[in-house]
Amino acid sequence: GRCRKCKKFCRKFECCLEENRGATPSAWTRQQADQIRITSENAAPIIEEPFEDTAPDLWVWDTWPLREKDGSIAVLPGGWRVIFSLTAPRSVLPGKRHDIATIRYFYSRDGQDWIPGGVVFPEGDALGSRQWAGSAFVENGEIFFFYTATGRRNEAQVTYEQRMAFAKGEIFSDLNGVLFNNWEEHSIILVPDGEFYQTQEQSSGGIIYSFRDPWYWIDPESGCEYIIFEGNTATPQQPVERECNPENIGDGDYRSGNDVPNGSANFNGNVGIALLRSSDYREWELLPPILEADCVNQQLERPHIVYIGGRYHLFIVSHQFTFAPGLDGPDGLYGFVANDFRGNYVPLGEGGLVVANPPEEPFQAYSWIVLPDLSTLSFINYYNLDGVSLDQLPSLPDQFVFNRFGGTLAPTLQLSISGTDTQIVNELAQGLVMESSTEGAPFTPRCEQGGKCGN
Ligand code: FRU
Image (tube, rainbow, N blue to C red; front, side):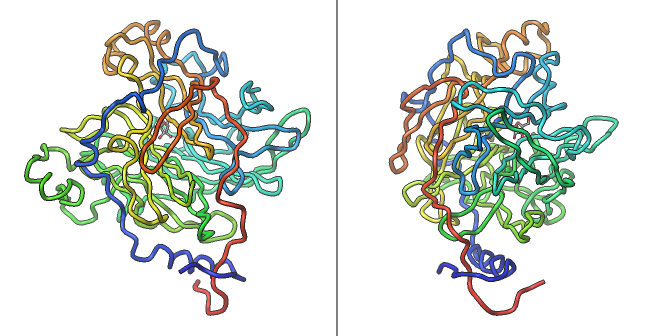
């Protein structure tokens, strides 16, 4: 059952823990992923040149809007919407940008003409040698900011350790524009536990490691507050013997008719989850994943949830090259739906595929993020490759590569969803973020009264 009104935060935590008791991860099975097809419903229109540069001197990629706590798009005093983007100077080769990513912000009154606001954090404040994707909400003039701290500050060589970090600051917003200031000290809020979520050391064998992209999410039905994120499933026992479990492959008929190719067990992406355990947003408790793609896909990136019609729509982005052997899916947006937050998530669209890059331009966009009105933001990635594979790029002249990377916001796509059917119904302006509210109404968190609080 649901919780009732609470007096103390620790009661809320215990109540929310109870909400998650016994929850097991849903599986994106090989059988389901075998259904992935590019269709006229999910193929994005080809992005035509010329397109606009969101920032002429910067590569702009993963982007997220400033939201209200309930997930709706925030509109600040002065009428401003705000987006945050990973950015790097256009002087570096596109492939190098991840190593020097910096979070900058842009603000706009029409949600389309984005004014550069500069870096979000003063030099030296942020954790990590660079910062990767996250999320942010505003409450009472304060900003609550979650991001991925990648590597360590002042490291001699670029490393790929990923931890999730939090910072809180103040928002100054009026007719003239938007500023962030008075940031409190940043804290690391989540590191992999090695039990549910792989540590970097445990990840050898996997093609890419992840513990990143914290997305703040409040469940409108329970009032419980979570971070969902991109992880890899840990195998705690030693020595590590990875194999594919029947529940990750499919039903009996499918299993008897389909072999699982060697090496598949090294693919173990999941959508991780942590529960808020202190009212200052600095303490979180890791819980078992919501969804796992063991033996299916290595990376379920930038997970986020859209609550519509009383159902939970969970979206991730993934790459062609991160599918396990024997499975094939395009760079795209993938989605799942469940009736309960910790219910059984089943694929939307074709085997999960909701937005595919078109076959003629298989890498034209990436990092889609679905907003409460089902409009979908992404960035322009590699285009006009004419059959050149991404692996070949490093051996080609720099100018060739520079001319084929967008590094700017892509046209926003409007989706519609009915049950598990999805469709791209419209292509809108580049980088358009419309005002949109959620069905998850603002509410007071509820939990049971009385009883003793734990530590
Ligand atoms: C997705 C992604 C994110 C990460 C960022 C790093 O495009 O891989 O998971 O935060 O890019 O640049």
